[in-house]
Image 1 (cartoon, rainbow, N blue to C red):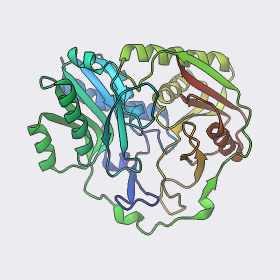
Image 2: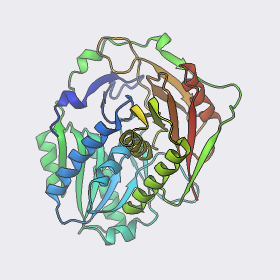
Image 3: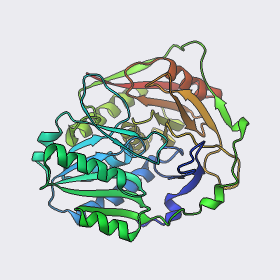
Image 4: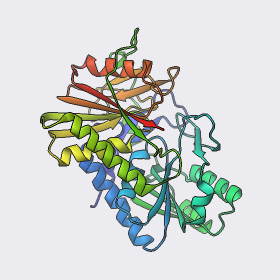
Length: 374
């Protein structure tokens, strides 16, 4: 599949970010904008084919970057037989875990972490570490992590690669990275500050920013999916795939033979790959005439009614992972069926807020499902 820059980019304005006031939003990634999961998986397959061609015999350890790329990174792995291990970086603290810390300087949430559990053994059995992100602007964040891995684990013999949908780096920077032993693969180059002037006049519109905080926790009918596979730790990717299929099978069994006009599968922050694959399977199995996916996010983006602007409504909620932190979901509407997918340790205030937001646009048929890591 061939993609142009305009197939992959919509420009939006960040809310109160002086370092980088604009944001490139991918309309087929399934993060901010409701998306057909088949389109997302097709894009993942395109990236996977590039990896196959470049590294036909390498055994791979793939690391996907939180939060935006956790879905597509695992989606790329779905089409690669050469992936041995997979892991997401994370911004969520988990007790009794050790982390490698690094920073993403231009982000709205700069701290990144990689749980170290099992990484040393993984690196001993692979040929290449592949970092997957949705957009690479300078490569500095990935370089920081690669350097930390080299220093901690002595991975001088391990090869490194960056794989991304969009590349904002100059040719000089790409060559510098390759001289340092980090090869780069991208679907499309993104010109420097591409079309940024088109959104500079966009301003905050109060009526498009809806605060959805529930005064009283709502009763949540939650389906628990017990699993030992947590992609925030290094996992055998084939094990992750098996659990995804088992999870989707359980959800489809609960739904029965009823067919819907449209279904939304909505993830929470870093919990995106189960959303992507469940949406794809529901679409493939004909559970609805149309299936859409997207997710809540830490990204505070201005919503606007401006012509060709990608995000028209913003709902502010407490995070399901940390009730002291605001998160956002964009462009909700009424669906025949909504399935919320989360992996939070506790269903509480944040989920009540999310349900309030969904119900505010007319959604009543809502199923909440939780990946419970045992």
